[in-house]
Image (cartoon, rainbow, N blue to C red; front, side, top):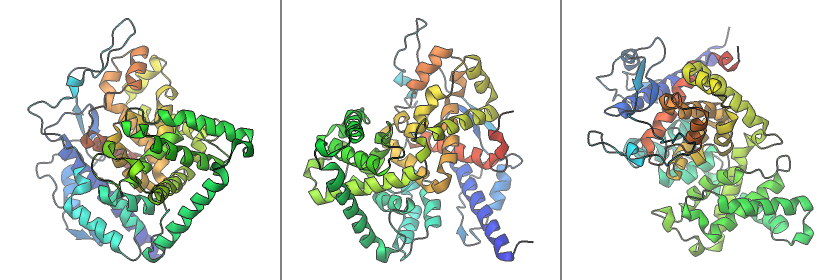
Length: 450
């Protein structure tokens, strides 16, 4: 038999999971209220009704956990809601060429509620107060911080929260500034030793790496003019080169340049306000820019430490996740799975970029930091959860995909109609992914092919 304290830990972990699921279910109900979304949206676990979930969350405080009592009183026990959008999100001519998606399809109708430009859950006053309480502690409770951050982090707290979640900044506030200063100086020492030198002092491989980075940096997030600034591109080049030199097992791989961009935006936000397109980095002091670069470098390193086999030779980590995605889609939406197979569309043809760039290129850049709040809150479980996110993302267009032939699907998946997405669509993708993971949590064999 297990000791009592182990049983208590298991019960508390199970409670936390159920709590987050219940909160997610409620959020999905609110998102669906008066709106129409493509695909199938699971509203409850198999065998559970929402009324049953409502009863389990009736107490305002259980086991030390606060529970939101704002459960929708009109909730019903449907297991699945089928929702559709009228028309297709892509217009494809039968001569094999494609037109740009009709943006009018994404305009809210007069009967729809207005779209919310920012994540409401992240800026809810009660949640903001809880964030402030956690961050004010002499030693931050990282588990509690992850629970809060999963649903979004207030923008002004995001730099601090990200540093903590990635393990770059220590939970102990007394040691935090000292250790950050040491890490920032270490980055500057690396710049002096490896970057601020002539090509005569570099190996041929290092020269090739620097040239490849200098080619890729101007292509980074090309639709966001902020990244066209010379000073931003110079910072990216330094960050990526030092990372490549310090990680010879993989070296620099195309796609890593995209992964540095959320960190740049978040850590620069400590020094600028308003729209990032109006930020003039040239006005930032040299010391502050060096601190931003160092923080970006170390946080990028921490992120990639958990997924480094995504970027080693042949990128086996990505290939493994693509296989899992294929198996997961087969279990969740067999008609789509069969249609892709019948049309001979390989998942690597579209999903490789998704996993390589963590979906940065597939959604508006304004939503990326919110997406990464959840990524970083997942901790060691992030790669597994990413598979569910990609499945949820793909099956957003379940109905449309089944109407397309091979060429139409390739064109559609290369230019997905997400340009007008807001936090509501992103929250739907994340919530659906979380619920599917909970459903399959005790059935790991669902990733095994029959």
